[in-house]
Length: 104
Image (spheres, rainbow, N blue to C red):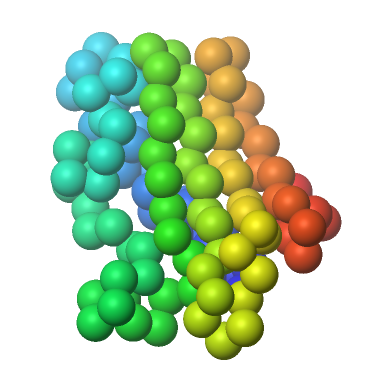
């Protein structure tokens, strides 16, 4: 399941970075899937019914974090997460919890 989340995190990252370019590399206006111009890949009942994660975006002027949280589909543990973080220095980190603790 980690591959599913990592693919969506990578796609979302690219759209956030493209959005920020329109705002002089400021991420503040790139805080939702609607503002970055991509469909939310989260599970939503009949929308993305096979998705195993929900996604959230948090931004600051020069950093952002995207969190994929496992849902209960196919007996998933809802405390499992994978995060992709961009620090103010531009460093990118991937961090997983519980079942995904080995993700880097």
